[in-house]
Figure 1 (tube, rainbow over the protein chains, first blue to last red):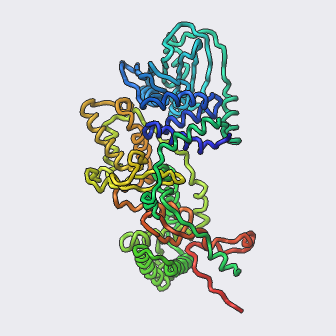
Figure 2: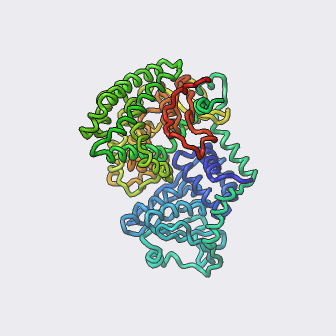
Length: 243
Length: 341
């Protein structure tokens, strides 16, 4: 089935609200899902898998466990990037915006692809971002230039084994400077895939023009979640509508 | 049917609470709407800074007379609205008479609109002032019509993470002093809550600790949320001085939404409704009227404190008027006088 971007965003916000997300969190989470879903990153399949987890746990956030001169480590406490991605990116840009580079490492976190929308949004303040994480036996690397509307999204062979649930984010004034400054962290194997920006853009335009394709099962799941924020209607409650 | 009568019928409408959450959830958009209206008014005032000519003063006198009649034709059983209409009508009648008598003299003396606005602010009701502002804007379509193309804004509410906590505290004290002035420890200050009913998902108002659904309340009490955030910030700043907002949010993640709103809206003049919307006596009808007025709605007839009947497009051109000569002065329409041959 097809839905509009506005319709989907509104439904997602209410669905996340029903899962205990707070204002701010449910706005950000909805934006992250819609971005992936409209740019060809299988956002809705990813959402379906994370909903099972969110449905059985209370929302939890990351803890700052280490901080030293622009280097931060957050413990995601097994939570989703939908809940701790904004904090991680904000921490990085709070430091980078002052002209220095910042590195944020989030350990014990899931659904890291959702971080893309937060990086794009943060880059609009004239900052560059670079992020990578392990996905099964590969490494995903994302690069966002200052004010860029789309990321460079590449898949590499793993050169070294690293924590499978870790996400590293680097932020600074430009991508070249980040690549040079953090070269020791960016030793990856051969590139095996590059998702072209043209395809992301075409996918987005198609989503706006034709509507966003969403699986009926997922839409029904969202509807069920949305129904949790609704209050039973009674004769007395109708007085609260002015009748 | 007679064409004048057809135009006068307009479209009847009833508006309930559904519009209130929209106003609260889209403060940047509302800010843009109001900013464009204020800019239109400022443009008109600046254009006539050297004085208003006699024919324009005459047009204002005519439109003021039309509003007096328009207000007299409104039928409402709501006592408050009826009194307000009568009071505005009385003040506008004074303006009408004054313009008729003094028009030529005012033009010779280089009268300016800012003097009229200032007089109205000092002597007349807010509703009268706003009618006058509307009439002034409507006198100059060539100056203001372009603003309707600037009513849209991309709504991005964003945390400024590098801001120091102490600066955010100061920002709230400056921009949200109205919220800090509310005593939320009083029962009546949190006597109402907003929720979505399973019936058409329509927003409703509940009584705190009496009605069902408090645990599902919508977060529309912006003033209260600002208060909670402020208290948390002050406490955090005492225990962890010299930290920025990013650190505060990592420690207090549930406040990220209200922090983003405060930091974003602090850059604007309008948008946030400076009222306690969870007070037991909250009057949502004022919010509804504000939004409806941007659609050109008139003839408000409040049916309770929660919903209002109104009329849309009264006086608007009919399809048959398109491409025909048409006097484009249909704001504040009055009953047509029919001549039967």
